[in-house]
Length: 249
Ligand code: NAP
Image 1 (spheres, rainbow, N blue to C red):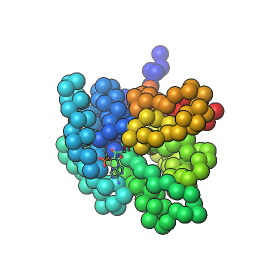
Image 2: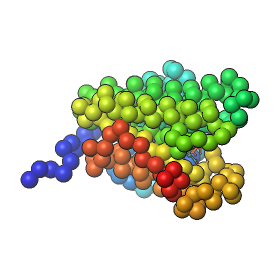
Image 3: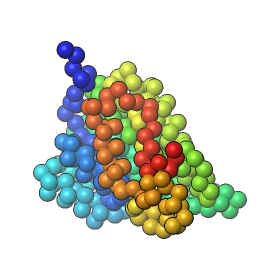
Image 4: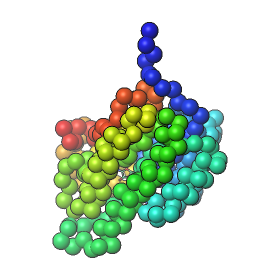
């Protein structure tokens, strides 16, 4: 009888960017529960990253904290090299680190536009480019990009963020097509309103627009990312999974 999934995971680890808090922290913990050793990347919040590492190791898993500004073109090689030295080949890359810097387009300055694009889109591109070689050689890889429903549908005041997240969707589909033959999948999740530091002030009116009538939790996004990173998702590539309580439906 044919095996359910054609490829099983070789030795290696996962790397989650922006795992010091929020969706990234929940994702690192979920991947560790699935048996991955996890590189816990962070920007400035070393204590948050350590808390994620502690949660993983206390549950019997393996984790390693690594910092770096993803908007810095030199960072991806430094981050991946540090994780490889500690945990082995990165076979699952979760591009989660991201920022907002909102304003109506007419008032948005170059710095706010460039910084959001460089962090959310440039960082994901460079990390993926650096990670793909070892994945292709291993004939196994999982890349999951954390996009947003704002990359799919309009949200006034977030043109820079929307452009970065729509860019991630294009990046996801195109790179998926480039590496599908090599056993590497590239997918995106598009969360709606998720209760994290990024969304401390969601207006009540916006919550009312969500068919589920509540914000999502980081764990609910993490579970979807963990599925896309699993062996079970071997035939899912180039897809965008909305995790939004029906908001974009
Ligand atoms: P969060 O709680 O604000 O966490 C953001 C993470 O990204 C932190 O770990 C932060 O690191 C890291 N980060 C930001 N800029 C960085 C940089 N230049 N270099 C390195 N790390 C950087 O955000 P979240 O809500 O969990 O969001 C995570 C992802 O989900 C983002 O891509 C966001 O756009 C996306 N998303 C969120 C929502 C939502 O409703 N929350 C909805 C859709 C999509 P430090 O804190 O260590 O500096």
